[in-house]
Image 1 (cartoon, helix red, strand yellow):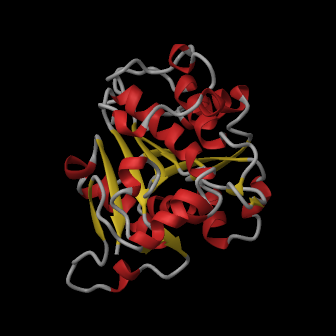
Image 2 (spheres, one colour):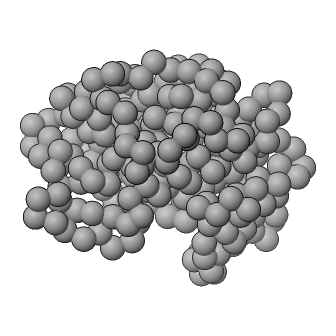
Image 3 (cartoon, one colour):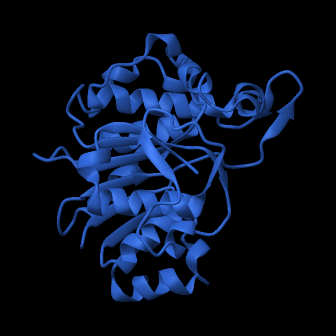
Length: 276
């Protein structure tokens, strides 16, 4: 399989491990990186840079011109097949006794996603879009996670996950999916006033191949799926909530690659959760 992929948030964690799997399968991956030097000592990535399969573009997804430039680079030879959007919690969060951990800016993922979708070339067939979210992101989601995780999502990281909720709201809008009224609307502070009318944002229903992927509590463990010999998945993945405690970032990357290459008809155009 040889796909043309644009990776936003691919310098580390799930974005990195997913991109590496696609590169090793022969795909081309264009990375938007605030610091391309992050890969200077990465032998695995540098091998693909030398072959021309990995393209490292300096830029910031919060800057509209940078986003336009990376789309132009990624699609200069052929249209992008997959947008892999894995921007997560970054920086140094501060702890507030009443609000839990606080991040700044508090709408990073939402605003970056809006920029990326608005700048996306409006070809006859838009690319697949995978956005990384988290279990417990919404009221309806938190109602289904294990009890102790309700405290984690509802208090300790309740501030950061508002950004993930905003990101999900953008995808639900562009994909034409029904939004659960129980979850409420993210605030204008997260979304920006008039976000639905932003120039270039795909109209409702136009984004036909999207996946919102909610991971359980993430850890840095090894990819268990790579050691399973009978082909069975060590993790559970399905529509809605799968009600688990944790999953490794490397196993989430395994699922992303497998879903795109082998099981898109099962997982595409849905909100999916993954956990052990």
